[in-house]
Length: 373
Image (cartoon, rainbow, N blue to C red; front, side, top):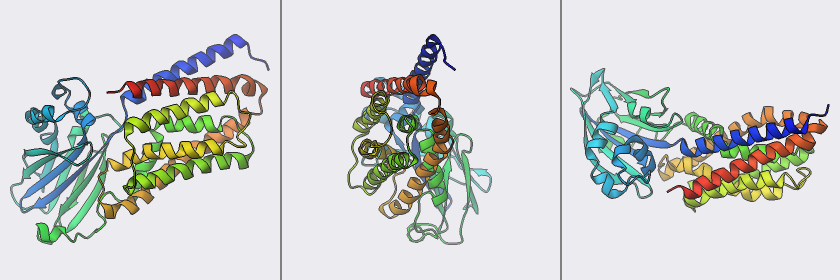
C-alpha cells in the first residue's frame, strides 16, 4: 500500500507541531524535588524544608519581583511574610490529631542552589503520633515530589509526598527526644526508603520527555537485536557512570550546561537518522550521550540533599528505578518499531517524519533552555 505523499507530509507536520508543543510544555513545567526533615523535640516539631530557588519562585510568584523565575537573596529577605503564608502555614503538622501551629524561624542556604526554610510547630503535648500534610504541593507542578523524613523517639519514617498523596504519619518511638536520641535512630541510613527511591527513578524517567524522545530516536532505525542491545547498553552504561560520579560528589556540571546538551543530543539523533541506515555502530554515539544524560538524572537525585552515608543506597535504588522505567518504555516500543520497519512505507517516509519531529523537539528544547534565565 502506497500512501499519498501529501498525507505523509501532513502527518509529519502534525507530529512536528505536537513535538514542539510537548517541548515547550516540558520546559515550562519541569517536575521538581524538595526535601523536608521534621524532628520532634519534646512537644515541638522542628522542620527544615529545602527548595530550589526556581521552585520557590513558582510557589511564591509575588516574591519574584524582578521576574527572573528564581528568588535572589534580597527577594528572600523581603518575602518572610510570603514564606510564612505559602510554606509554613501550608505545612500542616498534627500531634495525635491536634493542630500544631507553625512559625517561621528563618531562611538559609544549603551550600548549592537550595533555600532552607526553618520553622517550629508547637503541639499541645508530646504526641504518640505525628501527622504531616504538605499542602504547599498544591502550588507546585503536579510531578513535584517532596522527600519527607519524620523523626521522633529514636525512630524514622520516610515518605515521598506528591499532590495525589501529600500526607504521612509517624509513630513516635519510646526513646527520649533530643540530640542524644537523634544520633542513633532505628534506621541509621536515613533518607527515603529503597523502594521509594526506585519509584522516584521510575517516575523521573517516565516524566523525562527529553530522555524518552532520545531513546525513541535511538531505536527508530531498527536493526539486528544484538546491535540494538549494544545501543541501549552503551546508553545505560554512560548514564550510570555519570550518575554515580555526581551522586558521590566527584563532579557535577551546572544544569545550565547539562540541560542544553541533553536537548542538543536529541536534535543530533533526529538529524542523524536521515543519514544512518541501522544501529550497527551507533553505540559509539550513545555512550558519550549517555554520560551527558546521566548528569541530568543526577540533578533529580542531588535535589534530595542526601547525607554522604545515604548516597550508595540512594544511588542503587534510583538507578535501578531509571533502568526499570527505561525497560517499561522500550518493552512495547521496540517490538512495534521492529514490526513497522518491515513496512516499506514506514522505512521510506515514517522514519523521516518521526525523525524530523524528534530533531524539531530537540532544537525547541535547546532554544528554550539556552534562553532560560
